[in-house]
Image (tube, rainbow, N blue to C red; front, side):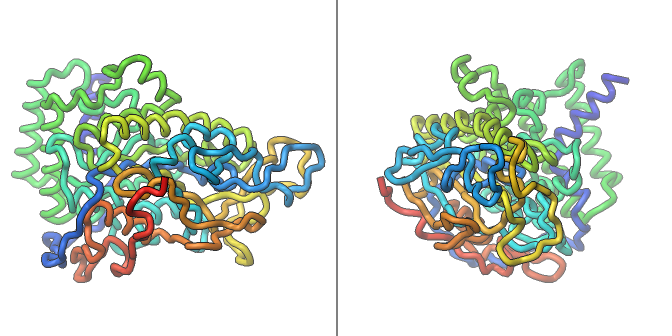
Length: 481
């Protein structure tokens, strides 16, 4: 029974994208059709995207946009607390990060920071709701399943290496709270299973994601694969969805099968890295995900995401012990993120690889949501006067200001774009950025025109709502350093 279960687990890994998509995608009547055959292409400055996802709400004033430092003391007035870490200089003159991010600060001469991202008002401030919006550019719910940005890129550009899946997502498991909500945006939606994410929950076991289970020979797996393909084609064992979706599922299986039989499967084997390199990255699953992302970017990955993982009240979801947990999260990300940028730069891959570090929204010690607006969900209850260190930090969801870091792929080096107020509320006050601008800036770097769309259920569906998103052109151009 155990061997049988392991085989089933393997098949699930091989079709992980279809599991996520089929659970949430409405059936379509007929083949997906393009509405944009005559759109002129634009020059691309990047071929690959790496998204470093800080799941859970990373406070901008505690990380990349520090304000006045207020050390902990008994009877501390909560309203005085703006940053619980002192500022530290980065390699860029005048740019400071909070303590604990010095390694990332040392590579900011190779990238840019947006300090004025403003999350949307979605009514309820819920992590998975805002994560859905960030990753798809569409507010939930939708009448059809909106594709993840990685799926759009996989569809429009295809694989850079015909064997490596064009969309790989690492670090997020679906076995804890809000798993169905997380699956909802880890999907290619109406674009079809073949463009969905190849899911690797734990990069340390990445090679196991592309191997048959222990005890199953390659020959035996090949026979099972051929039988499955025959049954699928002859009996249409996938009852839900259109012919297009069934065909897309089979193409996804074929792609996984090619990978299994290819020398490129070695890309997923982190044991091939020198020990000193492995140890530099190894701060845990996220750090090893950065190492895997480097290997994939150098070997034909197209869109690669690495998540610190969202689990309620864990990681960046700092509803209590905010200062202490942010300190641990900084140690988790600082060294591997910086090393990823250095390695890509030293090998010449950073020029054509766009690396993005982002989160769904920020946090504040006092207010929830945004100034002068009542929100429907106020999770954190903190005292007005701090006597215990567990209340020292940023605990409440704040949607009016956040930071996004970008490197490579034509991004200006040493650029600081946008600004937030130095006093509470630390909201965006200059060059405010919203999500459709972020998406179109990524598409712009990849040469994907903003008018790109497909017809679904009789209406056009654009990469950003109604095709109104505009790239931030000021992010691109010659270095400032």
